[in-house]
Length: 410
Image (cartoon, rainbow, N blue to C red; front, top):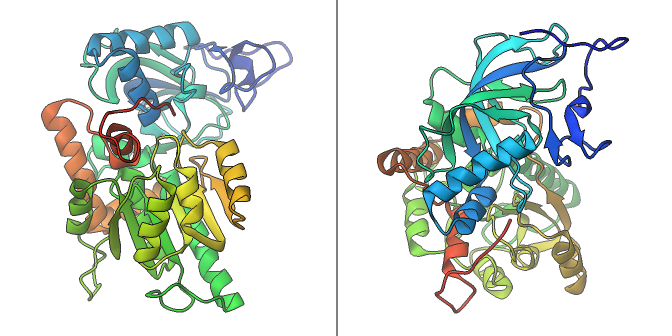
């Protein structure tokens, strides 16, 4: 490959502005079309793509838009990448991530990667220049993990992690896909421990003094299980897992807890069943299990979960939204409308050290590993999309009191 420079320029923009084709002047994520030319600039990295991991909201929308036809889903992905120079669903605005092998590193790249490194990108496909060269011949259109051939470009401000040798690639990809959730959860729960101890604030019944109550909506999914383990490690006194049905509840109860715990509790201390879109139902369920929560983590990727999360959180507490379906309007006006003094955070997928923390949790927490292995194994056996509670179970359940599936967009 040829390193490209322009007169007077020694590197491209670390933000990737030089790759934006239209409209001019916006960041790559907001751009309609990027330039995926494989001739890298001095601070870029060229990656031979092996697998895409489409984000949950995008894959669900593609399946709905194609009426469940795998061929239609495959055609839609190919069309998006060919027309936009990146994988960004025009309906959801989201993308996913990828794994691949580094083939070339520009001399001014700050990412610390070397040719031959097998990596996972920790930035969204919605801002990553991408070309697919094999027409997705090895993909059946049934899974959000997409084997493919092509190339991608990383900028100076991109993030990537070298895949570990001790974990299977599909498992590592599944973990890194959601690694931002446990990292931010760990930080917020740590801050809550400090706040409770400094202020002498009382805890909800069943939680030791100075140790926060944490509620996790979608606790049996990928980001939910990692967040539960991260909350425990950060000092949570009581963890309440909210799931949509008995199947997810049983999986969560069966997951073993951290090594050395003597009380027999698993990943969470209490499991409750509630529709995350039913505000009163979620609030009542969390309070009946030892709430309100000092920290509430939303890992359910469907619309309408703002109200329940807010009502389930104690005054002065924090709500973390890890969902592309979160509505800023609904969250802000909803909290105002019920006089809720809560801090609301949008998980952006990045915290320093997030990949390292998530991989450590998958290695050291048997409950987390058991749930991830079951999901990855089921995916491998059936070759089709395995719905996680965090983004699909509520969508399939329909609104409270109804059984018919309802469409949703993230």
